Image 1: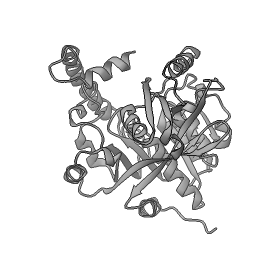
Image 2: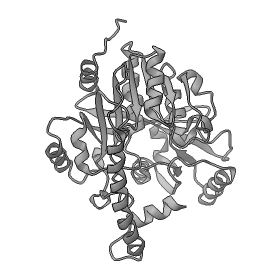
Image 3: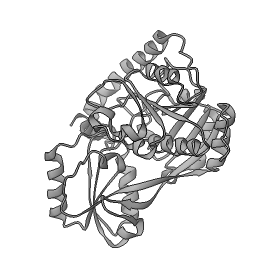
Length: 361
């Protein structure tokens, strides 16, 4: 509920009643910024791991496409014969017990133990080794000491100052409206945009939603002229259900009921609206939503009310639905990353900078 109210406030139209609570968020943002500065000063020197560390993070709250990029980069490195580890706090999980295990074991755990993003990643990266701890530096130390990996990818590590990184890769959502780029909670910025000066690689995500992509690139170049700059789109190619996989073209003449609990729901809504025959309704839940039976029954009732042909969600939400029967076809979008100027250049840069040795097939 609180997240929904917060989003209504920051998405408000000018001169609305939401301006009143927005004033209090503006005041809180000063305290937040002060807390961030104090925290960074209090951390001290970062801990250096014994294996190379790649951090993939962002400067905003909410989704920027960070998790698909973790899977995308990890998969390419694994295909090169490089042993990959993933470090995460397992945000959103109920049980905060630390653990380390290969992906093929993690995917069989409860989502309450892993968190939704790690459950998603473990299914996509069964060969990777996952180290999950609420303190990422501790998780990294455990993974490095295991001797099982050649490189560690830290999920959402840009603000984790306790751990030294060899490469900081930051995602930047081009679809965010300028008025949202204010300090949290008055806006969505975890840090000022000037923090991008620390990045080694900046990947502009959802570039097709930008009003002026060239202006964004100029702004990022001004903030950080040395960073490698890429832009990425997330392309839906298939629909995946419990029993079948279909081409995305299947929904071109179908009515769709969409639901998801992700950070950037509106971008997903626009994407589905463009590719479906008719988007009956788009139901937004909180990011990292824990789906109770009442939530699932509500989705079913609403889809029944709209007489939708099928129900559509994201992979991150799918892993939390269990075996609930919605009474109609239900799929998640299989998203692939389309990187420009090309994944080869990014992987080449990472392997050279991190001193990774590609294995001969």
